[in-house]
Amino acid sequence: MTGTIVNALAILAGAMAGMLLTRLAQRFSAILPAGSTALGQRLQTIIMQGVALCVMYLGISGCLKGSNSLLAILSMVLGALVGELLDLDTRMRSLGDWVQKKTEHLLTGGGQASISEGFVTASLLFCVGAMAIVGALQDGLTGDHSTLFAKSLLDGISSIVFGASLGLGVAFSAIAVFLYQGSIALLASFLQPYLGDAVIAEMTCVGSLLIVALSLNMLGVTKIKVMNLVPAIFLPILLSLVM
Image (tube, rainbow, N blue to C red; front, side):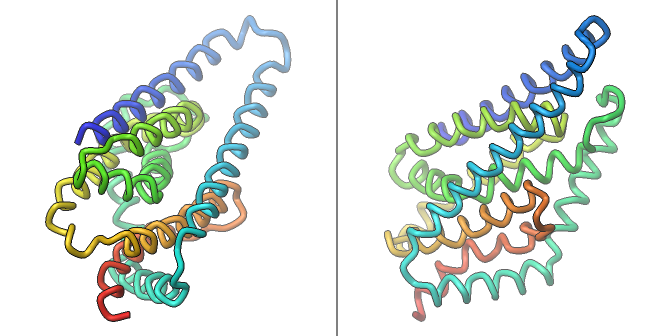
Protein backbone atom coordinates (compact mmCIF):
# COMPACT_ATOMS: atom_id res chain seq x y z
CA MET A 1 0.00 0.00 0.00
CA THR A 2 3.01 2.32 0.31
CA GLY A 3 3.05 3.14 -3.41
CA THR A 4 -0.68 3.87 -3.41
CA ILE A 5 -0.39 6.20 -0.41
CA VAL A 6 2.47 8.12 -2.05
CA ASN A 7 0.48 8.34 -5.29
CA ALA A 8 -2.60 9.75 -3.56
CA LEU A 9 -0.53 12.30 -1.62
CA ALA A 10 1.25 13.41 -4.81
CA ILE A 11 -2.09 14.05 -6.52
CA LEU A 12 -3.44 15.93 -3.50
CA ALA A 13 -0.31 18.08 -3.24
CA GLY A 14 -0.26 18.81 -6.97
CA ALA A 15 -3.96 19.76 -7.04
CA MET A 16 -3.53 22.10 -4.08
CA ALA A 17 -0.47 23.69 -5.71
CA GLY A 18 -2.40 24.23 -8.94
CA MET A 19 -5.33 25.85 -7.15
CA LEU A 20 -2.95 28.06 -5.16
CA LEU A 21 -1.27 29.25 -8.35
CA THR A 22 -4.65 30.08 -9.86
CA ARG A 23 -5.71 31.99 -6.75
CA LEU A 24 -2.47 33.97 -6.73
CA ALA A 25 -2.86 34.80 -10.40
CA GLN A 26 -6.41 36.04 -9.79
CA ARG A 27 -5.34 38.11 -6.79
CA PHE A 28 -2.53 39.87 -8.63
CA SER A 29 -4.31 40.16 -11.97
CA ALA A 30 -5.10 43.82 -11.30
CA ILE A 31 -1.43 44.79 -11.06
CA LEU A 32 -0.17 42.55 -13.84
CA PRO A 33 0.46 44.03 -17.30
CA ALA A 34 -2.47 44.18 -19.69
CA GLY A 35 -2.97 40.93 -21.54
CA SER A 36 -1.18 38.80 -18.95
CA THR A 37 -4.42 37.10 -17.90
CA ALA A 38 -5.14 36.07 -21.48
CA LEU A 39 -1.57 34.87 -21.80
CA GLY A 40 -1.98 32.76 -18.66
CA GLN A 41 -5.12 31.18 -20.05
CA ARG A 42 -3.39 30.42 -23.33
CA LEU A 43 -0.47 28.86 -21.50
CA GLN A 44 -2.86 26.77 -19.41
CA THR A 45 -4.63 25.59 -22.55
CA ILE A 46 -1.47 24.64 -24.41
CA ILE A 47 -0.05 22.87 -21.35
CA MET A 48 -3.27 20.86 -21.00
CA GLN A 49 -3.06 19.92 -24.67
CA GLY A 50 0.56 18.91 -24.22
CA VAL A 51 -0.37 16.73 -21.25
CA ALA A 52 -3.16 15.17 -23.32
CA LEU A 53 -0.67 14.28 -26.05
CA CYS A 54 1.65 12.71 -23.45
CA VAL A 55 -1.32 10.72 -22.15
CA MET A 56 -1.98 9.55 -25.70
CA TYR A 57 1.66 8.50 -26.03
CA LEU A 58 1.46 6.47 -22.82
CA GLY A 59 -1.74 4.85 -24.07
CA ILE A 60 -0.35 3.93 -27.46
CA SER A 61 2.89 2.54 -26.02
CA GLY A 62 0.88 0.45 -23.54
CA CYS A 63 -1.35 -0.94 -26.29
CA LEU A 64 1.69 -2.48 -27.96
CA LYS A 65 2.31 -4.74 -24.96
CA GLY A 66 -0.67 -6.93 -25.83
CA SER A 67 -0.29 -9.86 -28.22
CA ASN A 68 -3.84 -11.27 -28.46
CA SER A 69 -5.92 -8.84 -30.50
CA LEU A 70 -9.01 -11.08 -30.35
CA LEU A 71 -8.91 -11.08 -26.54
CA ALA A 72 -8.57 -7.28 -26.53
CA ILE A 73 -11.54 -6.87 -28.89
CA LEU A 74 -13.75 -9.22 -26.88
CA SER A 75 -12.74 -7.50 -23.65
CA MET A 76 -13.69 -4.09 -25.06
CA VAL A 77 -17.01 -5.28 -26.47
CA LEU A 78 -18.09 -7.21 -23.37
CA GLY A 79 -16.72 -4.53 -21.08
CA ALA A 80 -18.67 -1.86 -22.94
CA LEU A 81 -21.81 -3.98 -22.60
CA VAL A 82 -21.35 -4.40 -18.85
CA GLY A 83 -20.39 -0.77 -18.31
CA GLU A 84 -23.31 0.56 -20.33
CA LEU A 85 -25.81 -1.69 -18.57
CA LEU A 86 -24.47 -0.51 -15.20
CA ASP A 87 -24.13 3.05 -16.59
CA LEU A 88 -20.90 3.58 -14.70
CA ASP A 89 -20.32 6.97 -16.32
CA THR A 90 -23.56 8.37 -14.90
CA ARG A 91 -22.87 6.83 -11.50
CA MET A 92 -19.39 8.34 -11.45
CA ARG A 93 -20.72 11.76 -12.38
CA SER A 94 -23.47 11.44 -9.79
CA LEU A 95 -20.77 10.78 -7.21
CA GLY A 96 -18.96 13.87 -8.45
CA ASP A 97 -22.17 15.93 -8.23
CA TRP A 98 -22.69 14.70 -4.66
CA VAL A 99 -19.15 15.75 -3.77
CA GLN A 100 -19.82 19.14 -5.36
CA LYS A 101 -22.99 19.70 -3.33
CA LYS A 102 -21.15 18.85 -0.13
CA THR A 103 -18.29 21.21 -0.96
CA GLU A 104 -19.99 24.14 -2.70
CA HIS A 105 -18.86 26.48 0.08
CA LEU A 106 -15.24 25.77 -0.87
CA LEU A 107 -15.57 27.13 -4.39
CA THR A 108 -13.93 30.48 -4.96
CA GLY A 109 -15.56 32.51 -7.66
CA GLY A 110 -16.50 31.82 -11.25
CA GLY A 111 -14.54 30.64 -14.20
CA GLN A 112 -13.59 27.31 -12.66
CA ALA A 113 -14.85 23.95 -13.83
CA SER A 114 -17.35 22.15 -11.64
CA ILE A 115 -16.05 19.86 -8.92
CA SER A 116 -17.83 16.99 -10.67
CA GLU A 117 -15.98 17.61 -13.94
CA GLY A 118 -12.61 17.84 -12.22
CA PHE A 119 -13.27 14.77 -10.08
CA VAL A 120 -14.42 12.58 -12.99
CA THR A 121 -11.72 13.69 -15.44
CA ALA A 122 -8.84 13.36 -12.99
CA SER A 123 -10.13 10.10 -11.48
CA LEU A 124 -10.35 8.50 -14.91
CA LEU A 125 -6.90 9.69 -15.92
CA PHE A 126 -5.22 8.58 -12.70
CA CYS A 127 -7.14 5.30 -12.26
CA VAL A 128 -7.69 3.82 -15.71
CA GLY A 129 -4.09 3.66 -16.85
CA ALA A 130 -1.92 0.61 -17.15
CA MET A 131 0.49 1.94 -14.55
CA ALA A 132 -2.31 2.04 -11.97
CA ILE A 133 -3.16 -1.62 -12.48
CA VAL A 134 0.33 -3.03 -12.95
CA GLY A 135 1.79 -0.83 -10.22
CA ALA A 136 -0.90 -1.79 -7.74
CA LEU A 137 -0.43 -5.48 -8.60
CA GLN A 138 3.32 -5.22 -8.07
CA ASP A 139 2.69 -3.35 -4.84
CA GLY A 140 0.38 -6.08 -3.56
CA LEU A 141 2.15 -9.16 -4.91
CA THR A 142 5.83 -8.36 -4.46
CA GLY A 143 6.02 -5.13 -2.46
CA ASP A 144 7.72 -3.41 -5.42
CA HIS A 145 6.70 0.26 -5.32
CA SER A 146 8.85 1.52 -8.21
CA THR A 147 6.06 1.68 -10.81
CA LEU A 148 3.70 3.55 -8.51
CA PHE A 149 6.49 5.92 -7.47
CA ALA A 150 7.05 6.78 -11.14
CA LYS A 151 3.29 7.16 -11.62
CA SER A 152 3.19 9.45 -8.57
CA LEU A 153 5.65 11.82 -10.25
CA LEU A 154 3.63 11.92 -13.48
CA ASP A 155 0.31 12.31 -11.64
CA GLY A 156 1.71 15.01 -9.38
CA ILE A 157 2.81 17.12 -12.35
CA SER A 158 -0.49 16.54 -14.16
CA SER A 159 -2.54 17.38 -11.08
CA ILE A 160 -0.87 20.80 -10.83
CA VAL A 161 -2.16 21.62 -14.30
CA PHE A 162 -5.54 20.01 -13.65
CA GLY A 163 -5.85 21.70 -10.27
CA ALA A 164 -5.28 25.09 -11.90
CA SER A 165 -7.85 24.49 -14.63
CA LEU A 166 -10.39 22.06 -13.14
CA GLY A 167 -10.26 23.10 -9.49
CA LEU A 168 -11.10 21.30 -6.28
CA GLY A 169 -12.49 18.15 -7.88
CA VAL A 170 -8.95 17.10 -8.81
CA ALA A 171 -8.00 16.96 -5.14
CA PHE A 172 -10.91 14.62 -4.41
CA SER A 173 -9.66 12.28 -7.14
CA ALA A 174 -6.85 11.36 -4.73
CA ILE A 175 -9.47 9.49 -2.70
CA ALA A 176 -10.60 7.56 -5.78
CA VAL A 177 -6.98 6.65 -6.57
CA PHE A 178 -6.36 5.47 -3.02
CA LEU A 179 -9.48 3.28 -2.96
CA TYR A 180 -8.99 1.92 -6.49
CA GLN A 181 -5.30 1.08 -6.34
CA GLY A 182 -5.49 0.04 -2.71
CA SER A 183 -8.28 -2.42 -3.50
CA ILE A 184 -6.27 -3.94 -6.36
CA ALA A 185 -3.20 -4.28 -4.15
CA LEU A 186 -5.19 -5.96 -1.37
CA LEU A 187 -6.97 -8.32 -3.76
CA ALA A 188 -3.82 -9.16 -5.70
CA SER A 189 -2.89 -12.04 -3.40
CA PHE A 190 -6.27 -13.70 -4.06
CA LEU A 191 -5.97 -13.23 -7.83
CA GLN A 192 -2.34 -14.31 -8.03
CA PRO A 193 -3.04 -17.75 -9.58
CA TYR A 194 -4.76 -16.06 -12.55
CA LEU A 195 -2.34 -13.18 -13.09
CA GLY A 196 0.52 -14.47 -15.20
CA ASP A 197 2.64 -12.16 -17.33
CA ALA A 198 0.45 -12.78 -20.37
CA VAL A 199 -2.75 -11.78 -18.54
CA ILE A 200 -1.16 -8.64 -17.14
CA ALA A 201 0.06 -7.73 -20.64
CA GLU A 202 -3.48 -8.02 -22.03
CA MET A 203 -4.90 -6.00 -19.12
CA THR A 204 -2.26 -3.38 -19.85
CA CYS A 205 -3.24 -3.34 -23.52
CA VAL A 206 -6.96 -2.89 -22.83
CA GLY A 207 -6.36 -0.29 -20.14
CA SER A 208 -4.08 1.62 -22.49
CA LEU A 209 -6.80 1.70 -25.14
CA LEU A 210 -8.97 3.49 -22.61
CA ILE A 211 -6.13 5.92 -21.95
CA VAL A 212 -6.05 6.75 -25.68
CA ALA A 213 -9.81 7.37 -25.56
CA LEU A 214 -9.38 9.63 -22.54
CA SER A 215 -6.65 11.62 -24.28
CA LEU A 216 -8.96 12.19 -27.25
CA ASN A 217 -11.63 13.47 -24.85
CA MET A 218 -9.09 15.81 -23.26
CA LEU A 219 -8.24 17.20 -26.69
CA GLY A 220 -11.94 17.76 -27.44
CA VAL A 221 -11.86 15.36 -30.39
CA THR A 222 -14.38 12.90 -28.94
CA LYS A 223 -16.84 12.52 -26.07
CA ILE A 224 -16.36 8.84 -25.28
CA LYS A 225 -17.88 7.61 -22.03
CA VAL A 226 -14.62 6.07 -20.89
CA MET A 227 -16.00 5.05 -17.51
CA ASN A 228 -18.46 2.71 -19.20
CA LEU A 229 -15.49 0.89 -20.75
CA VAL A 230 -13.59 0.37 -17.49
CA PRO A 231 -14.93 -3.21 -16.89
CA ALA A 232 -13.03 -4.24 -20.03
CA ILE A 233 -9.73 -3.89 -18.14
CA PHE A 234 -10.51 -6.86 -15.91
CA LEU A 235 -12.08 -9.18 -18.50
CA PRO A 236 -8.74 -10.59 -19.76
CA ILE A 237 -8.54 -12.41 -16.41
CA LEU A 238 -11.65 -14.40 -17.30
CA LEU A 239 -11.22 -14.60 -21.07
CA SER A 240 -7.65 -15.93 -20.77
CA LEU A 241 -9.09 -19.01 -19.08
CA VAL A 242 -11.07 -19.98 -22.21
CA MET A 243 -8.86 -18.62 -25.02
